[in-house]
Image (cartoon, rainbow, N blue to C red):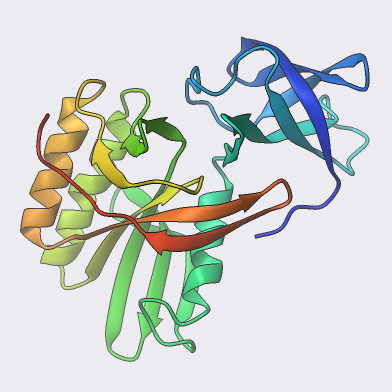
Length: 229
């Protein structure tokens, strides 16, 4: 997935979870943060960030915060982009044939899953989770408790019982990742839900990404360890 109108700035602070103050060429601008997670290990005063300038003159914030540099590496923090990156990846013939039909935001029961796929006799629901938390080369999810995430995992199990394929795909929005594991310390219920889902037959996948200021692309599969630690 590509972005247009990307510029660089310097992160200053985050008055609330929706807005960051960014220095752009010596002027401070309020920018929309497209991620409501904590991102405390990323959004530190003085780090370089990359912004997308909106073409909409009526917007309250002129820029969206897209990427952050962490130890010289880019981390995409746009929580809306992983779904589109996975859809683009699927259209290349990954997991399903190239001519598979793909729907975004498909309702099922009391949930709305990110992607629904039909390919011949196959019917599948896919839930996508973007991951921005990295600790010692290991990706972790979530970075804050997510009851909604637990609900989605539980309903993927129900999809299986109803005869669908079910996938949970963790899109790690950076490169150089050695493995993925649930963030047991932050939300043990989510980790338990993942264990239950794998045992039930939900296919749990994790992929790192190649990230540029104006692009993010799914890259390589990452080993998954669901053991409680």
